[in-house]
Length: 121
Image (tube, rainbow, N blue to C red; front, side, top):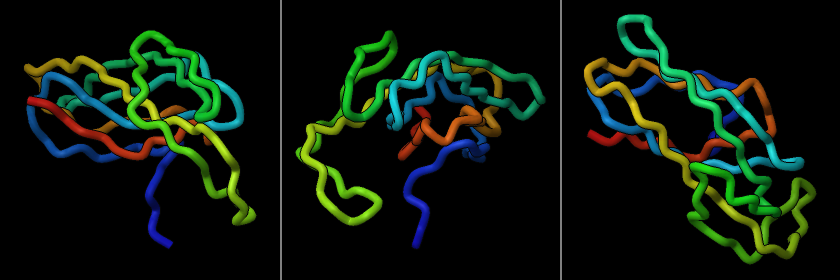
């Protein structure tokens, strides 16, 4: 019952000065092109990033996208097994390291699923 993936949310980030934000994500229900991700800094300024994400069943090799994991199957909402392969992708955005990060706003799209976020000094 614990959330292990999020979409359409603002995620609070640990305050700090970082050079990049990396995350694991995938798209569902077809490729999701030109999605907007926003990083807000503690001074209220923002960095906006546009990224296309491949559907987890159809890698498109979009710019800025790398395949992180290939899985043999997935469990469907009804509990059955769907044979794959199914993919998880990695993305990275360069941050303004002179500013302190505050949050990351995900696209207003339930078909963009983020599973992990990491900040790099």
